Length: 81
Image (cartoon, rainbow, N blue to C red; front, side, top):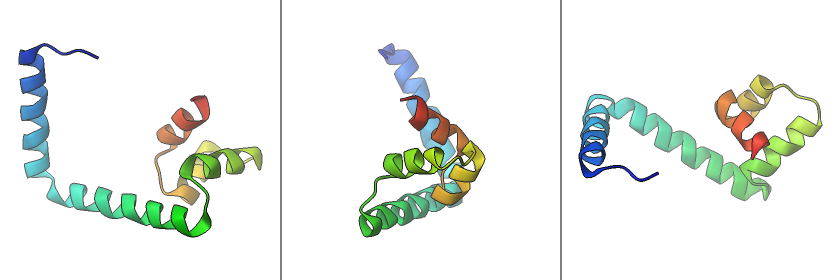
């Protein structure tokens, strides 16, 4: 996606302001990300592989989301990709 210079500056400004207002969400996201990465390394199974395995077992998107620690929308996107 190619943004105009003005649109890119507006997006960056908005994102910077959001980050300043939501440091707890940023911290929570980073911690969650690294917990998932550590689990991947320990199990030897990537997030995508785990999602496909759980889906093959018949779990719903929301159940997979709870087990993997990600949003059900992300689960859906992984399965569609």
